[in-house]
Length: 274
Image (tube, rainbow, N blue to C red; front, side):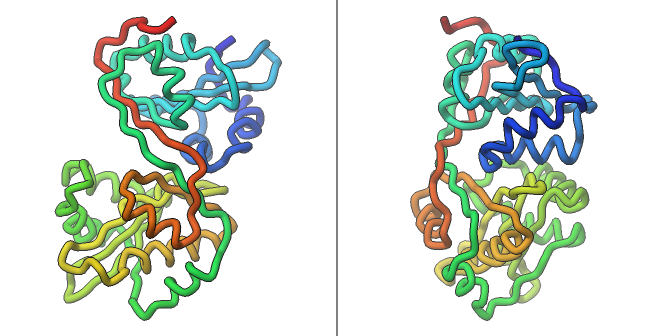
């Protein structure tokens, strides 16, 4: 059976998702930061009985959905939740779980990435973090300068306005942090975290200005982020699909643990699977 979750389900939910805190970083972070009673966010869980332990969960955050299950789950039932929402836009999560759910929906596009995790300090991070490059921690006053850099990075798809709103909200709420390198008053390298929670953080928005590449600036910034977050007893994770970026992260000690999918939906969803 599938039912909507509330505050009384927090312990059972955290027991389920806590078995894989890296993959469930967004679910853990959103529950810790926003709870259960929000217009923009809902959670449903599947169990074999009303009082039984949760075996699967799906989070709605605005128009995005994130499912998680340790094994077989009621994909048709979860898909029905999406079909009821005319604003449903995307499903993201572990590739196997997302594809199981996608069989019951009309899919417009799928983006597949590798998911990597870092759980402990190592000599590579210590060495990179000790390089003589001054690192600054951003405040909301630095948002425009940082986004002036990310605006020119072709791999980033957010509009300039959305990028600034998102970064400002993240820094203001404390759900992430941004470090950067500046030269002659211009931000030339940056890296951020998002979805920070009590157990983990996601590395995002790693960028170096095209004119300053090849100096290992991104590695230096990421290493400092990793060193500080690991010192707080948290793990780090990220997803990537750029082989060159993958080499940089693996050199710092990240290891691939899963594949991640971002699957976009057609506006009109009809039953397509069996």
